[in-house]
Image (cartoon, rainbow, N blue to C red; front, side, top):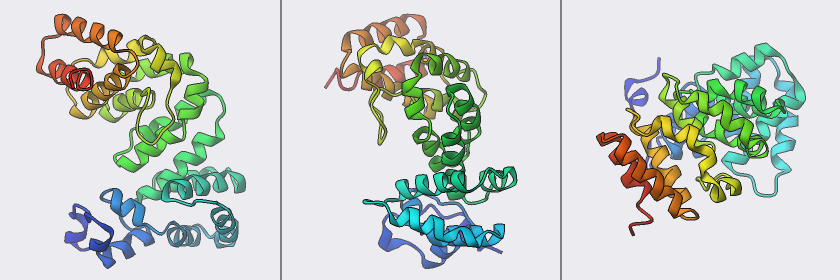
Amino acid sequence: MIPEYILKRKGARSFKDLDKTVLEYLNKGNIQTANLIEWLAVDQLILLKNILTDLGKLDWYDSFYESISAQEKPSANSNTKVIGLTFLQLTNDPDIINYLSNHISDVPRCWAAYWLGSREIKIDKKLEVILPFAADSHFGVREVAIFSSKDTIIDNLDIAIGILSKWTSSKEENIRRFAVEVIRPIGVWTKKIDELKESPEKAITILDPLKSDDSKYVRDSVGNWLNDASKTRPDWVLKVCNKWKTQSQTKETGYIIKKALRTIHK
C-alpha cells in the first residue's frame, strides 16, 4: 500500500526538497511523477531495470545502457527518446507495447510514445498511434507525444493540419489542446515551424473552432499560438482577433484575444 500523503502530494519545488521515499516509488514505477521536478529526478535506468525485470527481459538491459551512455549530452528528454527507440530496435511485441502504454508510471508511457511515434513513417498513421498519448492524463506523456510527432508534422504540414482540424471537435480537452500545441509556430522546447511563422493562416481551420473553447487549457494554447504568430505576422493576428471580437463576444474569446495580443500591446 502506498501512503496517502504520497498519493496526494503536489510534488517538490526543487531537487533538494525531493522526498527520498517518493523517489524510491518513482524509480520502482509504482507511482506517476507529480511535476516536472519529479519527472527530471527519475533515474530512468533504475526504472528501466525494474520494468525489464517485470517483463522477463532483463537480458536487454545492456543494449539500453550502451545507447544511453553513447549520448554526448544526456538529459531526461534524450534518455526518454533513446529508451523508446531502443525498444523499437529490440522488439515489436504488442504485449510489451500494451504493457508500457498502460503502465501506472508516466515514464514508461513516454517511452511507448517515442517507440510508436518513431515506428510510423506516414503522417496519418503516426497521428493515429499518437492520439492516445495526446489524450493522456499526464502532462509529461502529452508533451512527449508532441516531441515524437512534430518533425513528421513539419514535413507533412498540410496533411497534418487537415487531420488535426478534425481533432478540434473531440470531447477530450487534451486532444483539442494537442491539435493546437503541436503546430505552434515557435512553441516551447520544440522546433519552430517557419512555414507557419510566415503563413499562419494555414492553421485557421484548427484555431477558429476553438476561439471560445470552454477549457482554459485549450484557450491558453490558442492564445499562445496567436502570440507566437504575432511576432512575425502581427497584421494577420490583429485581423483574426478583430474578426473574433465581432463573431464571438464571450469571456472565453476575450481571454484568448488578450493573451494573443500581449506582445503587440507591450
